[in-house]
Image (cartoon, rainbow, N blue to C red):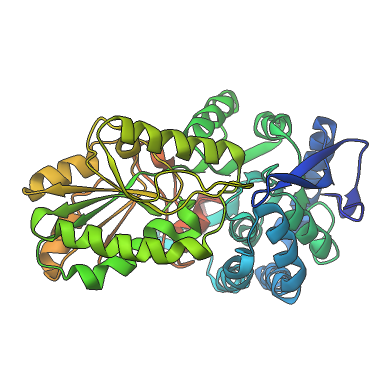
Amino acid sequence: MSELGQLINGALVTSDRSMPVADPSTGELVAHFPAATVAMVDDAMSAASAALPAWSARPEADRRAVIKAMAEAIGANYATIEELTALEKGAASIALEALAAPWFGNHIAEQELPVDVIEDSAERTVKVVRAPVGVVAAIIPWNAPILILAEKVFSALLVGNTIVAKPSPFTPLATLYVAKIWKDLVPPGVVNILAGDDEVGKAMVSHPTTRLISFTGSVAAGRAIAAAAAPGLKNLLLELGGNDAAIVLDDVDPKKVAQRIFDSAFTGHGQVCAAIKRVYAHETVYQDLVDELAVIARERVAGMIPLSTKPQFDRVSALVTDALDNGGKAVTGGAAVNGSGYFYPPTILTGVGPGVRVVDEEQFGPVLPVIPFSDVEWAVKQANATEYGLCASVWTSDLARGEQLATRLEAGTAWVNQHTEIDPKIPFGGVKSSGIGRNNGQVGLDAYAELKTVIVYKDPERV
């Protein structure tokens, strides 16, 4: 990986440090990548700060054109990005990311930066305009590194910000390759990418130049970032974990909904923040739904992908063991696959409920507890009985009832007859411990902006 480096001020920079990358499908070391140093954070922040005035002053049309070129470069280099992601994630799961990133980029590039006219009278004009926040520090997770990088970078750039971004040390390779192909597409200092350890991320968050921290990751890390940001009163955009509940009412056909529920729960092998993490099914459809989910799970084993990291593999294993020790039953799966790599089969659990870790915590893996209920009020209460509040869903043939229940779920997004849907025009984010702020849509762009009120009094006699 000697041709890769940190993108700082328009140049690829290397150091004497390197860090290993393991293939989750084997657990073996497959590469080393050039690791950023804490000193490089100062260089990147200085470059971003110096580039800010010229970039924010460029016409919107110019910024849009740059974003489109960056998005198209990801699509044009799909094969190499896929190869690198397969190497570091143990599966060619970049396919959707490499296709979605240009889609996100082109959509963001077409979004408006509106000027809200509050008043236009004979006396005065009152407007609200979108101004750049400044230098953005973006920290990217390992589960969707290219898509989330694109989402954060393109949103920041359109508003006129400059950015320093850091991928997870588990998945740096594809991101550093994207840095390489972006190098000549953006003015020096506008986009800087540093791949390194947690100390690099801490330095980015605490750096005095940083004005907005855009982070996607765990609740624990989000809390630490919020604490580090507090002394500088930095803006925060935090998309954190979730323990998404799906409530399945008694008027559904289990055969019709099972595939969609399974696909949501096990997309990315469950390593998606907006995946279904627990199902509450009415007792009249409960067993049929469990049976249908089990059939799908058994068919899925042959094509399963590994968990992306050893810590995540260990966590999933521990949660399932705890569930079985507390009276749970593994209808499918229930134990790691023998052999090398971080493989864990799709696991459908029954016999668990409130107070069991796999129900109360975010497992972020291929595990789905299914819990029966007789009273929908109990199901709603249980769905809300968590510190998390990212997403939730209701499954019913009665759309009016479904919408009414969805509005009562304490989540940033609540669907009826759908789950796990990310769209660049639809705001996405969590409530409670699942985050601060929203990505995507107009409100997502506003997260990267300062809303500035401009008031002009028209009477010439004032001066």
